[in-house]
Length: 290
Length: 71
Image 1 (cartoon, rainbow over the protein chains, first blue to last red):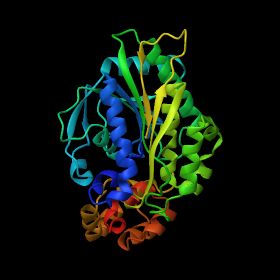
Image 2 (cartoon, each protein chain N blue to C red; image 1 turned 135 degrees about the vertical axis):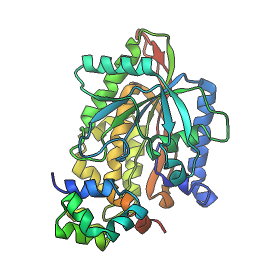
Image 3 (cartoon, helix red, strand yellow; image 1 turned 60 degrees about the horizontal axis):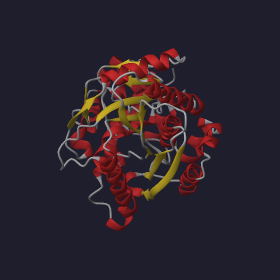
Image 4 (cartoon, each protein chain N blue to C red; image 1 turned 90 degrees about the vertical axis):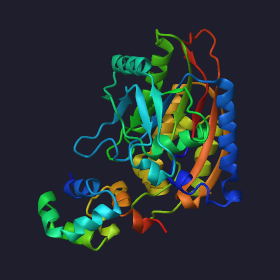
């Protein structure tokens, strides 16, 4: 899901007909979640210099905390949503960490992350704050999308695969898992062309996902992505990780809006897991790239 | 690391009210963050394109000067 802050800040003031496709998409995702009742959401997201600084910037960071305050202090006022304390899943998060390390990754890890629009905006739409706090647990996995050089699209794909392997190997109580990838699509943040959207690029991305050709994006360089679709589009690697963690899936694009108020080409795509015969699932479920 | 000190200054003053205080005390801030005259000048004038050219991370430009982007 796109996570642009404007999708929360300006949601009420966006003209209804413009936000309608996204509103419908979010309603569908909420219906999917209500039906599935996941135990945990594994969320591929990115920091926006709220958790980390250039003093030391991690490529990947797994959130091990037992709670996650969404958004961080002060974020509630800016994003116009109440802060909520979601549960973490330390047992699963630790397992994922050790499993991907065993598979050759060296992520950073965190006992406490600061969330801004990256996680807060999607959760606001998936679990509206006017209802009771859901019991679903969150395992956040932050991917560097903002301070170059970034982990490559290919590397993020491989991380997604490693996370999936971790989920399949999880020895604990089985969990119903939703995989979430947030960010994108086209947007320029804080640089010349701030405010632009590249609808053609966005539609191309959605089309590739729709046609089961998402892996073609692995060949795109960061310069190409940034030049065509802005520094914000570099967040697509969160989607790439989510797709890879889902493995085989049936994509269901749900909505796209060139959301000018949010300066972002905003989309929501649901992924329905395909059972692969013979593969044991300790955790299984649906995914969403949004 | 191009723009490191400049980015640090923006991250530690990452809102318009904080930038206002920063500019009000510019010489002290310039010394504290070891900024060049050019970097301090770009901040003082809120020259966002120049800040980007000087290597400030654009996300940090966006937060520190949020009021310049929102209308």
